[in-house]
Amino acid sequence: MNAPASHPAATAASNTMDAFWMPFTANRQFKAHPRLLARAEGMYYWTPEGRKILDATAGLWCVNAGHGRSEIADAVSRQVRELDFAPTFQMGHPLPFELANRLAGMFPGDLNHIFFTNSGSESVDTALKLSLAYHRARGEGQRIRFIGRERGYHGVGFGGISVGGIVGNRKVFGPGLPGTDHLPHTHLPAKNAFSQGMPQHGAELADELERLVGLHDASTIAAVIVEPVACSTGVLVPPQGYLERLRAITERHGILLIFDEVITGFGRLGQPFAADYFKVMPDLITTAKGLTNGTVPMGAVAARDFVHDTIVNAAANPANAIELAHGYTYSGHPVACAAALATLDIYAREGLFARVAGLEQRWQAAVHSLRGRRHVVDIRNLGLIGAIELESRPGKPGTRAYDALVQAFENGLLIRVTGDIIALSPPLIVEPAQIDTIIDMLGSVLDSID
Ligand code: PXG
Image (cartoon, rainbow, N blue to C red; front, side):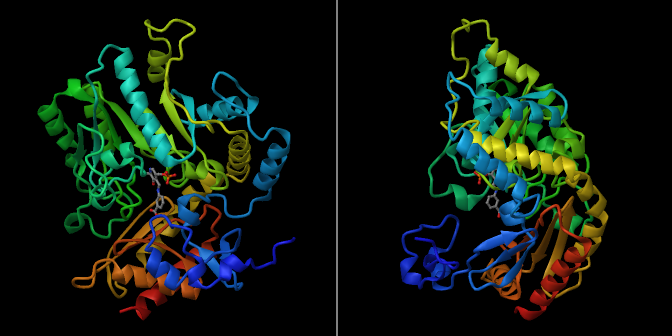
C-alpha cells in the first residue's frame, strides 16, 4: 500500500506519540503540543500541514549544503543497490579508502589518517581512545587523564559526558571516566558582551591548563579536548590568542590536543575546519554532522601521522596483530561513504566554504543589528554561526528562549535554543536576502514575547 502524502503518524493525536521516547526533549510538553517537520528542500522545511519553515539551524547544525540534495540521494540509492553493506573488520571495500584519501587531503597538515564512526559521540570516544593508545604505545601508559572544559559538549557517550562540561548531561549518570578534569569556560560577558567575531579578553584562561598540569603532573595527562567554538552551550567564541596558548601548553607537556569539530568542521567558519580558520594545529580532529550533510549518520576522526604511526607501528606489535582494538560494525559503511563523497563533491563544486567567508561580514552585521531589541543582553558570532542571549525571566531560566522557539516556529522560522540563548547556524547556501529574513523574523519574535 502506498503511504498517503501526509502519513497518519505525523498528524496523529498525542496519545499515539508515546512509543517514541524523544531525545533531549521535554517529552510530555512536546507531545501535548507537537512541532513536526515532514519535508525539506533547500533552505526550507515544510510541516505536515504544508507550512513553510525557514531553516536557520541547518537541521541540528548538520545540513550544510541545504536540504534535499539530489546528488546525495542518487549516490545513496545507487550504493544501496550496488553494495549495501560490507565488513571493514579484516575485510575491505573501496569506498572508505577513497573517502579517507579525500578527507586526508582536506584536513590541515599531516592529519592524514581517518577512523570512521557513526556519530559525533563515537568520534569523541574514538579520539579519547586513540590518545590513550598513543601514549601506551610509546611507553607512557600512565597518561590516562583527560582535560575537557566547562560548558563543553562532546556528545553523550560516557567519555564525552566525562570531558564535557554540561551539568545536566552529567549529574544523573555517575562519575564517568576516572581522572578527568576541566578548564574554565571562556564566556566573559562582563568584558566581552557584543563582541563581533573573536572577543578580545580571556586568552589567559588557557593558562589554567598549567595549573591543572601542576596539580596532576603532565605525566598523567593524555589529552585536552575542546570545541574550537563551543556551540551547543550557546556559541562561546574563543578569545583572541586562547587556542594558540592552549596549543603551546599542550605541546610543551607532551599532551595531545583534540579539536572537537563536529559542528565547526566542513565549512561552518568559512574554512574546511576551525583548525584552518584559527591556524592552530591539533593532533586529532573529531567530525560528524556536515560530513554527510546530515543525510546518513557518519563521523570521522583525523589523526596526525605521529599518532597513527606510533600506534600502528609499535615495536611490540607483530605484523599480524590488530593494532587497535576499536571499531564499529558500521565504520566506513558503504552507504554513508557514498553520501559523504557526494557531499564533499557539492562543497567543492559550489565553493560553499568560500561562500561562508564571503558572507561572514554580512552575517555579523545582520546578527548584531538585533542589539538593543527587547530582552537581548549579548550577541556573538563567528563564521556562519550566531547567538542572541536573552535576559532570563526571574526564577524561570530558559522559558523566554523556549517561548521564542515556539513563536518562531509558528511564524515559519526554525531556531535552536539552549537556556536563554538563541543559536543560529543556517545552511551554507543561505542567500543574503534570507539572512535578512531570519533577522527580521527573529526581531518580531523578540517583540512579541514577554
Ligand atoms: N561534539 C560536538 C562538538 C557536538 O556539537 C557531538 C560531539 C555529538 O554528536 P552526535 O552525533 O553524537 O550527536 C556534538 C553534537 C544543539 C545540538 O542544538 C548539538 C549537537 C547535537 C544535537 C543538538 O546544540 N551536537
